[in-house]
Length: 115
Length: 148
Image (cartoon, rainbow over all chains, first blue to last red; front, top):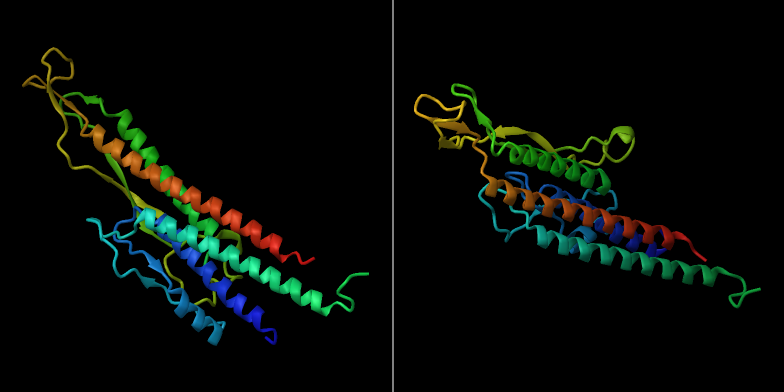
């Protein structure tokens, strides 16, 4: 893609969407015996996405999670915080993308001052 | 990758059936059985991380070529019966009493069930919170597509 910021935001929002699905899945499985919470490292996943947009993002297990007696290591509050954070950052990148796109369209207009 | 809504939907379904089972247990906390009958035993649902069946869009979207056919969503794997000993109360006058004068009740522990209910309700509201958040973000994404 020639327009660089579209490329970047495509990667960012893909990773954010992937994370939101993983976190929702963690919360859904908060009471499943033996389930281990999964997440992606945003930085690593974004680098992979930008290098090759079709590459799948590999989820990882949480390293420092406390495992309950039934083998489940989901922290419900921790996941809710992650979900909130991720949602905020997803809307932030949507806002930035919107702003960049309107700037681009303004620049493309023959007469930016209107009429 | 199935969407966040089917994941949350599966979670709400699973927690709902768990609460249904808890309600059945609590309803039977004082059930008694005649001598020689099988007493009521507390049921407990077991969850399993599973593939969400995304009915109408199967095969057409990312699910085929995505590569990560990982476990998503949650399903009810089944119910297990508690092995706790049934409650025995001494009441020789009861028509349900056995030869020793004991009445066999259920093996439901009311406090355990209440704790389980709170846990289930917490998980349910967490899923609802995720649903609301996803809806809000989606609305914002849609509105940011409109370029003036």
